Length: 65
Figure 1 (cartoon, rainbow, N blue to C red):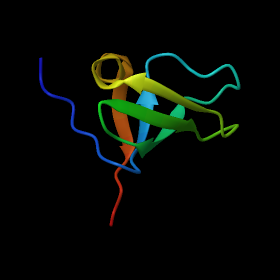
Figure 2 (cartoon, one colour):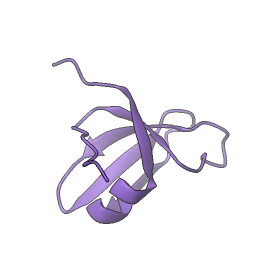
Figure 3 (cartoon, rainbow, N blue to C red):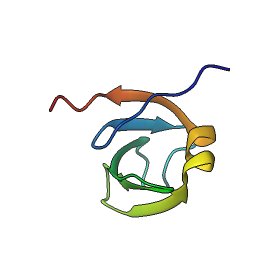
């Protein structure tokens, strides 16, 4: 399986939608754990990097800067 490439401030799509109805999340912190923030309601979640890589579907918007 190909390595998923993502970076800080990218907007990603996860496999399961958030209960608020949106499926877009912004990466706001990276390290051993990754913190993502829901683009719909603003709720943030911190999950381990390997679990994030499994649950991420694709990058919707790449960070330009």
